[in-house]
Length: 315
Image 1 (cartoon, rainbow, N blue to C red):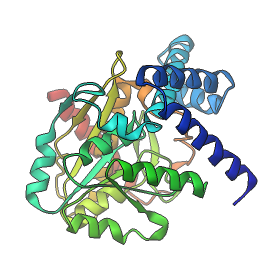
Image 2: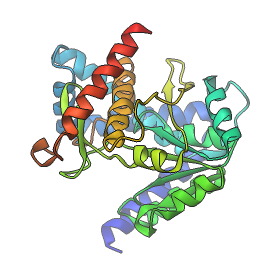
Image 3: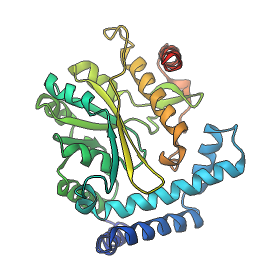
Image 4: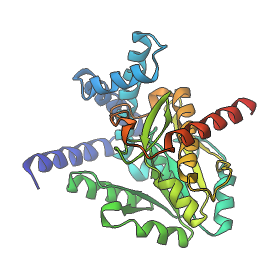
C-alpha cells in the first residue's frame, strides 16, 4: 500500500472517530462545514460544473452554482452519517428517516422467493438506504472495491455494523446469483460511465454509456428489478421511496437488457431532475462517446426511453 493510501486511511479513520463521538446535530454541522470546504477548494468542482451545464443548459449559471453548493453540503452530511453508522441507522423511528413509501414492492419480491435486484444511483445517502432496508430483510451491496484497500476495509466494517453484506466484483460476480437464490436483496448501481462497451441509452438528452448488468441479472434470474431512492429533506431527515418494477414488453427479446436499462435510466433522470443536489455530479458521466456501441443498441434504448416518457406523462 502506498504512503498516500496510508495517509488517506488515517485521515478517514480520524474523521470517523471525531464525528462519531459528536452528538448528531453537531456532527451534521461539522459535516456540512466539510462539504463547504470541499466546494471552496474546488475538489472536482470543474467536472461537476461541466456535468451540470450538460444536464441543465436551460438553467442559469447562478442556479447551477446553487445546486452544486447544495450538493457539496449534502456530501458532507453523508460523511457525518457514515461516521455514526449504528447511531444513524438504529436511531428512534422518525429521527433520521421521516418517511418510507413503497415497501410493499419489496415485500412482494420477498414472497416471490427469487430475491430482488435493488437498484439505486449515487444519489443521496444510498448507504443509509441499504442499511434501512437491511433492518427488514438481508441486503448485500455489490460493486467494485475502492482503490484504497484500508478505506475499503473500513467501509466493509461500517456495513457489517449495520447488517449489510458486501459483494466485491473483483472476486467474481457469482455471489450475486448465490445471494438472489438465497432470496436476498442485492443493491446495485448503474449510473456511472461504463466505457465503450456499455449500452448507450438516453440520459439528460444524450446517449450515455450505461452498464446493463442489473437488467441482465434480473432477466436471467427472474428476480424483480426494484428501484429505490433516498432524499434528504430540508430538516436534515430522509425520505425513502421504493418503486414498482418497471414493465418491460417482450422480456425474451435479444435487446431486452438494453431496453430495461433505458427504462431504469429514465427513472433515475426523473429523480435527478426533481432533486438535483442529491446526485453525484463529481463523476465524468458523459466521458465515453457512442461510436463503439453495438448496432441497434442506441435505437432500442431510445425507443424504450420514449415509451417510458409516454407512460410517465399518462400517469
